Image 1 (spheres, rainbow, N blue to C red):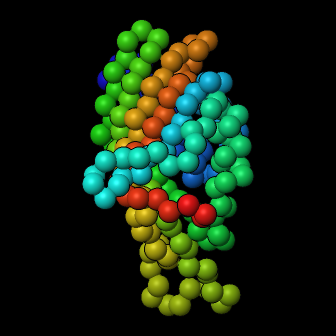
Image 2: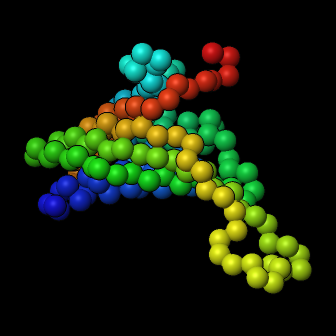
Length: 163
């Protein structure tokens, strides 16, 4: 893997970590000022259709993360996994396509008196809740890779309030 391919993949790694932390400022900084971000949901026919309006620019991404993503309940978090990255770099432009799965984690609170005798291992549950593909165009700006177009292709339909 070339250094450029590794740098491009790292942008996605920072993106999913910012999503999991609900870090709008950190996530928004990964996008150009005129980036276009669109979520697509799979329809019953197997095609994808846009969900809502696209976000334009890193500031809009930051705002969306901070105002539209629900905070994790106490003891819960999300954990994104990406895999099978296909990266093509052409000078200061790159395209990346990667699969993703989002897991919801729920911790079991530690009992006031401590864990019962014989209790071992992680205490809680992990369950997959979303999957799909990230299809992303990036450009190099002042030596750093930034997302210029980001399509989130969900494997399932999405229900939104009021829709």
